[in-house]
Amino acid sequence: MSAWELMYLGPEGTHSHEAAECMASGFFRGASVQHTACQSFDDIFGVPRAPRRLACVPIENSIQGSVWQVWDALTREHAGPAPRQILAAVTLPIHQHVIFRPEVDLDQIDQVVSHPQALAQCKEHIRARFPGARQVAVSSTAEAVRQVATGERDRAVAIGGRRAAALYGLSVWPEPFEDRPGNVTRFALVGTPGDLPAEPNWRLTDWTASLCLRGVPHRPGGLALALHTFAAANLNLTRLESRPVGDTLGHYVYYLDASVRTYDDRGASVLSVVQDLLALQGVDILTLGVYPVYSPGE
Image (cartoon, rainbow, N blue to C red; front, side):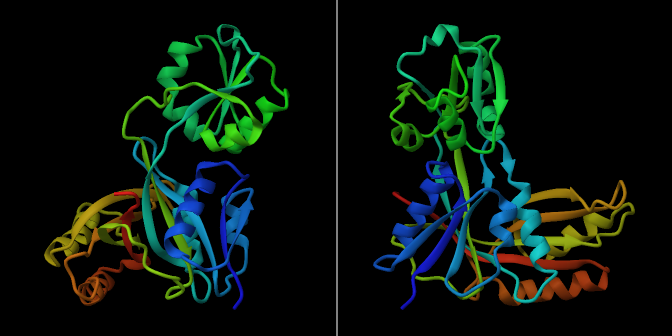
């Protein structure tokens, strides 16, 4: 039997890499898994769909919110046949650390290097510990660690994970550096519906339907009427966000999550009714995934 392929946002040592390894331990028990690092979300979603080819991607962070590149990519998937969807999700704690070469004087730091999300998660601590240091955004936390390790940036520290620091033999500030405790990220396992290897032995926290509404009328009460449809169906919405369509100001798509755990059929019947009612309003609803959400290690 051929191996599974699990793509993630690389390079090796990123938080996405750690999440991919966690997913492999839970969903691919005993199976052969090839981990593939990709340079961008465009690279991940640009790879042709294929059986046994999945992707581990972040979809939401408790501090910075939704990862729009992923949600937009999932929506674009519906323009083609057999779109990939979210098959499952895991919620993982994320700790950002100050990483540096042992010989560097931390009182002389003039650059703090990391991915924009990590910099944003640590902005208050950066201002307090490294006042006046320039914040430099790079493609990933692991790339930031690499640049510090190779000396490409003098008098610099990286913000990233312990795994990346260990890969390059760098020192790590002992305490997490993120501004708020409880920093977590939800990662999604994306692939062809039905192509899920196994059910993990983790705590199940919810069953979620992630949806995209297109064509909501741009008039008073247009969005309210669409949302009332979900309320009338007794669906609890746990997330609602808008994104510009890109053609003109005021035109949006709406992303929302609905909890469907209480439905034996995972909400299939009630979502079908909602879809029919929204169609009468001229609203198109895309299903980006109906999936279990797990918390590993609990």
